[in-house]
Length: 417
Image 1: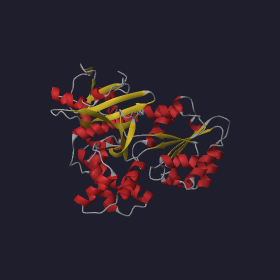
Image 2 (image 1 turned 180 degrees about the vertical axis):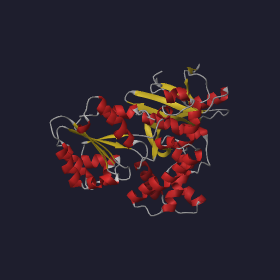
Image 3 (image 1 turned 120 degrees about the vertical axis):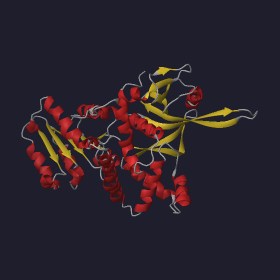
Image 4 (image 1 turned 30 degrees about the horizontal axis):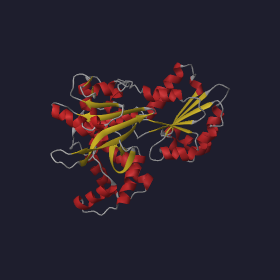
């Protein structure tokens, strides 16, 4: 079974021969090795690169332990180059090599070598790449499977696929498990034994209980506005634990740096400014979020919002939470300043979209509620509501585009309506 990952494969292809070290990053188990050693390797062969001009080394393989010695690896690669044709160096889990930065920088001096590596997010984050390679590291960030990638390997209808995806997420290994019990156990195990361990070891965190509690709170509150002060108050009132907001902020930064969650900041659309707090936090993979709560707390509305956020980020958009301020007199003569929220303000180059997420809009009142913020935005950018339970995508009489969830997720050009 081959899972299509054309978005990332095409990025690797476009970035060939650019004089930089191509570094594939992302959370563990999201498919970095598969992208490099399977899909990209097959591409190289398909365009005529001979096998002896492709050097593949899986550094997490015990049989390749000798290559973890930086001097041995450096000498081996330099000696491997036998002629003037282009060579491709593919290294998996390069963080297992001490002083790997110096080794990779050495490869930049080989004019006919193009280097591609994967790195564990525990020691190899985007900020590290910027620091260590001084502008010569080219990061290609890979996410867990999008819904369309998931469906490329799923045997069933879109609705059936959605029910699986919304519960267990998009880690590729899940296709190897036949039962829901096995899938849930896999997700719970790697959350504890891999992701949390990575975060603790990298950041030398001793308060295991507080870190766990914070993750539980965030998992329960996806799609909700929060900030370190509010989270600190929650610890005090619910857990009877004193945890300073600065400590919580450091923990949140650790989660973001590990690619486990992402922060969406608030943006005043009319005032054209960012509002410092509060923010929303979304999980990179909805299945990991569900596993964190032992699959006990499931709200499709919030999970769908998380999936839409991830899809927008995969497509390259910068995504904020929008705020629209307006005055309303209602039944009183005195006008009252109110705020309406836009789920997502999405920006990419000169494109902008205002997006609401809604499981359904069964009544006129519900539709008015969902589009209340959108109709108050007076610019010309496209405004839409992504709805799961509609049969077809269409404009309504207020100029708002109602888009089917599956139209949005399964068509990479769906926003070009």
